[in-house]
Amino acid sequence: MSKVMKPEERTARLRALRDSKMSESAHAFVRASAPLFYASLGGMQIPAGPDIWISGDAHAENIGAVGSAKGEVELGLNDFDETVIGAPAHDLLRLGLSLTTVARTKGLGGAAITSMLASLVEGYEVGLLRGSSKDDRRAESLAELLREAVRADRRQLLRKMTGEEHPKELPETEKLWPLAEGRKNELAELVARDDVQELVRQSDPKHAGSVKLLDAAFRVAGTASLGGFRAALLVEVEDAPRADRLRVLDVKEAQPTSTPRRAGTPKDEAERALTGARALSPAYGGRKLAVLACGHRCLLRELMPQERKVECAALEAAELADVARGLAHVVGRAHGRQLAAKEARSWCEDVSEKRVAGTAPRWFSRALAPLVGIHESAYLKRALEGT
Image 1 (cartoon, rainbow, N blue to C red):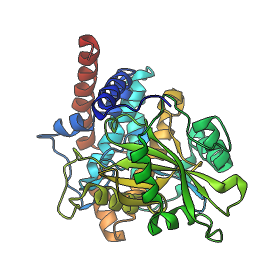
Image 2: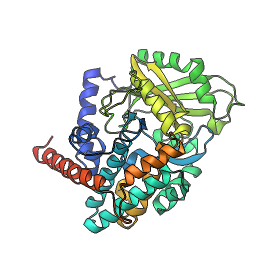
Image 3: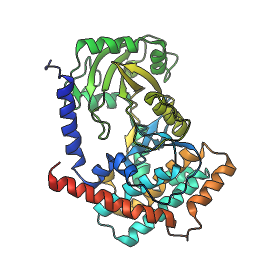
């Protein structure tokens, strides 16, 4: 086994990796720049909206195929690092900024971007009012994402992570780093907890065998969250069928958020992230636990083979309007399920601001234009200065 890195060495490597990933493209920079997004909102006239749970970081790649404990698949929000009780307009703007950056990267002009943003707002309104989920699948790339997710199984996930369908340990790779034996022992104690055992077995309750830890490694994943503690846990469910016996758990530190939070948001960061996940994406959030792991407040979940993120680099320019509508529908649905019908209609009217069909509301356009400029300028400055 390679030498286990000291915490300060690991932090330095993660910071360098984060900087490298943020430099890949303007959208990669936007993806990891939630603090800049919120720092840039001062003085903007944005509708307040009701007090509900929001993603806080609803960029395009934080939406994708998610699986329930039973393997059922839908499009949903999949990242809750920034979730709070907050202003729902922030999710809409964050998604608009993300997709506008993608559109500009792909060479779309003003008219096409205007049409895309109108589709985005329309999709949000339909989802908010609990309209047809067909908007999720209008874009072929989103429909294919769901088809791929339905076909996936745990062996495929294990092969992708380890190179084997039935590994006995986690290999050392660029995304899996060695952990000290003491840390592994702590994680073995975590896996032995009754609530963790139940969480792992909930996908197939008839297999009531105990769950044991086989191996653990530090996991390198994401961009904005790089720097916090994260681990992959290879576990075995003793009496499960061979194809489903091995599982991978993800333990991710819940770090402080940059999203402005309203009253009622839990102070404990893990409880905040867990409660937001369950409000915004019930099937996905229902597979999570708030735990103390290796001295960190974390969220624990099983990595499901159905999980797929939208890959913005692979999107076709011609389908961005349909993609925008579908992703915004997911956000609107996540917001709307927290509201009574009357409240949802009232908030929809505020969002719409009596907009003209085929256009985005004025408040949205007025806020989005400077946000795009601020983020593109910051990205170029970062690239030019080599930081």
